[in-house]
Length: 169
Image 1 (cartoon, rainbow, N blue to C red):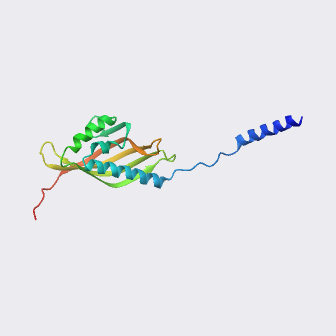
Image 2: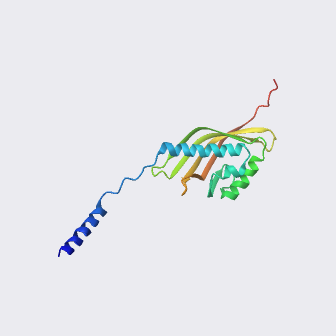
Image 3: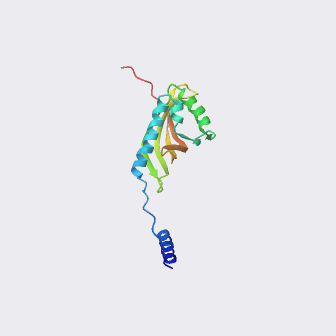
């Protein structure tokens, strides 16, 4: 009988243990995530400006989707690499970013980078440098190795202006 009572007590403890509150889980640190995402964006821009297409695309998830104004969607790393190689082959190509804000999902597994940009490129019609200004939204996802990769992007220009010719001093 004592054995049955002991088994019953252990069973009750096991059941009650299942009803207790779960141990506190570590919450996401939005500031740390925002800093990590800003670091990814900075590294991507640096790679692009150094004409390193492979380095720029290394920040993509395999299923990356890029939505650029006036062009079909870029789907996958191979397509993004082809597009990026074309862009960085332009000697005038340069990107700068401003007004950057990172919104972090409550679960800490996604973050959205919102920013303005300036993209300098050679105008195919005039063969002169031109600056496109615009806005972008970049969606990053936390990877199993805890790094952040670019899942998709929407890049929309708000206007372009010719670059003033350099003045000799």
